Image 1 (cartoon, rainbow, N blue to C red):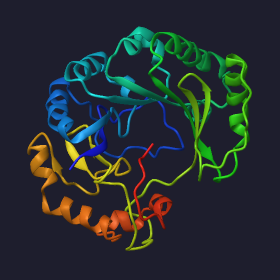
Image 2 (image 1 turned 90 degrees about the horizontal axis):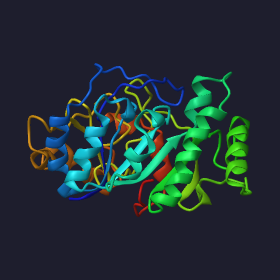
Image 3 (image 1 turned 45 degrees about the horizontal axis):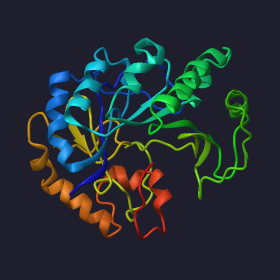
Length: 298
């Protein structure tokens, strides 16, 4: 069993509260660097990539630089998703000199969501300056400007226009603004810098109505998640650990992967059966309807 992506939540605390992300109800938790190393060593043989979040803002971790250093030491391939507000705190070189860092996703939709009346240009300028420097010094680094707030697959919200205009002006590039995320989500800007569009989605909740008992999901085939307290969950959308598969700080990751509950879920997805109640209530899973073969998650 090998996952395309393992999410390790180094902190469930965020400095922002977006309408896109529901508030975390779990106890606030920061993963210690010792526990992070212990978890990373266990999951690396089973993971192509490591994402340093599930909920929370990873750059808000008080020892983020040490976390990244451990990734470098263990030769992990790291994907980082951040709102970008702490980028200057560490300095660009922290990221550009990291051999592990393969991709950074900037959730640009987060800023206007939290500061609708503020000038967005200073916030964007730091990210754009970093991107330009990355193109020169670390051209293999993928950078995604996420705008995951489209109301529908074939449109774009007006609130994105200012962001798009500033970015296109900075890089002096035109953009074909027609978007249909059912077929293509990314648009190249320069080097390996991209716009990445997607529609809004609802996070699954046990309070939601039952949707269906049949369906397919990438959970436990392409991805798995670990919360900041070590709790293993099947996917990055199980933010409250409704489906607890074990705790990697108490049991080995290998033992958890072989647990009856995990195996039953995994076999169910292969047969297009949703065996867990949270999965039966999840609406994100509709995106995989009528798709017999899995595709890589973004």
